[in-house]
Length: 260
Image 1 (cartoon, rainbow, N blue to C red):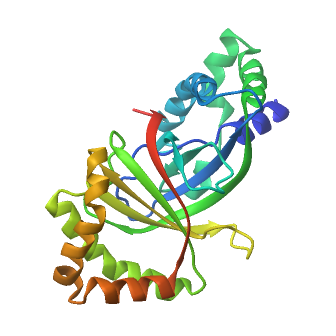
Image 2: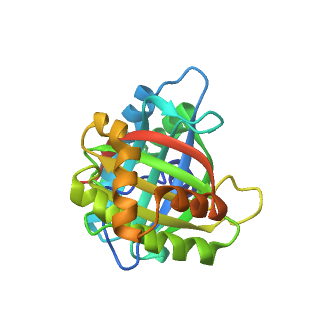
């Protein structure tokens, strides 16, 4: 049973619904790599079998939500070494990583080998190449919508305190963009662990668009919102942003699966 618990924990650390607003919101993010010859359709088929388990955990209050994010039409930065991501989300970091077996007693009783078979099939489909623990720092009043197109941007930051203070100000820009109808929500996350020098990013944001065509309006929406929200020119804003952080990756995603 201990071996089975380990397999579950390593195989399916999966994703938070939409990044809804919460005073304390944590996310355990798993970065998945497909096994040779396997496709995202194969991975979705496997994660669909895990979805009822994640729903049981949500219903029991272990997590707040769970989502599997896949790149939309494979659109992501060159150099990103994962094929999709999954996240456990919720306010209690001590619970997020747990899979209390008493919650699955009926499932195990009806088919004792079911979980082991599913774990074995999962391992043949994908592997988790790394995981991270993040915390939501701030975000728009309207959270990102999981039915929309979502853009993940990853940043590498040296001075975390200065960058967080900067993004707290920039929140006004995103609120203006929400009000103008360009985006439906924006959230800003900090990676709590790992924080070593070799990580590709230690901060990330997620914003949602109800239509793909609104990506074409993205820069124009910034240019309109920045002077009104911050009282500075877009050019000055970009100077400040590039000094405080380095963009290391981006990915356009859709939600493939989630808890209800």
